[in-house]
Length: 416
Image (tube, rainbow, N blue to C red):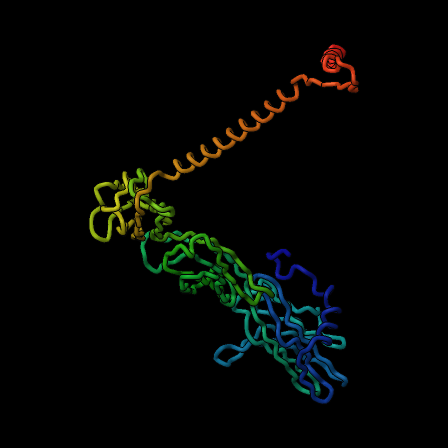
């Protein structure tokens, strides 16, 4: 549509369909003696766009229309003439650059007095009266309410809070140029922090429009940092709310934990350490180690987030509570741990493991040697020659003993 012309589309092309629409859509008709003014009661127009106020006269009697007048009701109750259509003199419209009658002349059944408005302005909103002067039945009228909307432009962004521990704005949602003012709300699921919302409303970039800004505020905390929240903008120009997601970037003071004493410490252990683990935004600037009873023992050494114990001494560190205090730009946080020292043992764990492995290895070697010895004995036993004595039948001869010896010798010679 060319907005530099009073009306970019031809009303004559749309007239038959819109008249049918006027008859079918719910509206109000004031009738007397078969004469009624039919209107579309509520009309919505958008800022800088085109709309139409539909009005026609329906009559079952033979009447003559002598004039059509559109009037607008002013806030003080008075009325201003917007447009007049005379059967012989034609239309008379003060703001003819933006308004025009659809029908070129007042004739036909029904009589069409619909008024087209282009480049709709905020001040066009209000209640209008469509009045027909007829003969011989007199004047008949009906009212139309025009609502003017402007579509807003919506944006949302995360803010950069200052590194201070106080309630401050974390995100901003802005709806610019809407009419009427939009409704802004925040959707979030932040555990551990109670959000606050404040809102400002000011005049928009065009007359009759509004700019609404909503701020999402909270105390700085790790619960909010990196979380997503949603700005919901509701407006009459859209069927559904527009949802805008924002990822928060929130500073927070240190949150401290201490590790390193998960395993038992024994008397005599050397070079063990406690570690101060801190989550913060911005990063920590200082680590400070101390005890609940005062300064650190002489056999310890603070090395930033690490506390080194050169040699575990039950006298100096047993049941001692160590404190780590961490500082960043927002403040400080601390935690503590109590160290318990066990009695010294003959050897440390590595030595015990080594001895155990050595015993198992020795048992394996002894078992292998025993197996080899048994196999060697069996092998030598199997390789020895055996002597077989062959006995001959005993006879009664005198030389029987000699015969036995000879038989034994002969048997040996046969095997060899």
